[in-house]
Length: 122
Image 1 (cartoon, one colour):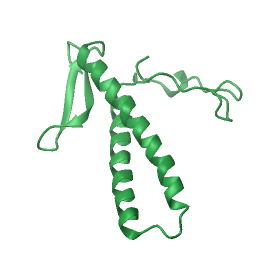
Image 2 (cartoon, helix red, strand yellow):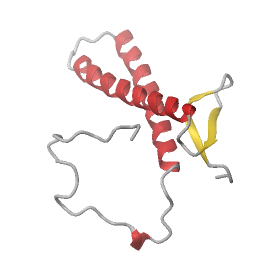
Image 3 (cartoon, helix red, strand yellow):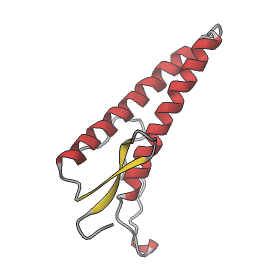
Image 4 (cartoon, helix red, strand yellow):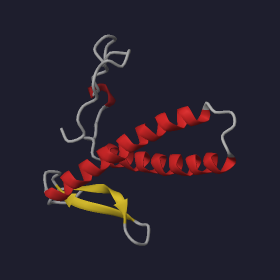
């Protein structure tokens, strides 16, 4: 963290493959671009997982297609882990674990999956 804002891991790397960071308060143009890219990465990962589930139901899936699928799943997992790391780093620190407010049964999202997840830009 700096005097001018927080340090945010961005959802892309530089030409050398090293992580990129942004210093700011999370309300600027580049933060919104990063939010949109993260949302797109998460959506693409979800779509790929659904596609993979259908492909893996085929017992005659050629090895080349299986390898291609595994490579795309690894890329999607890398993206999702970067998003999780970035978002986790931006969570407010909890000084005392007693300050945590656990979710009581019935207070969380519907277990059947009927509720919508919060918007990534909210």
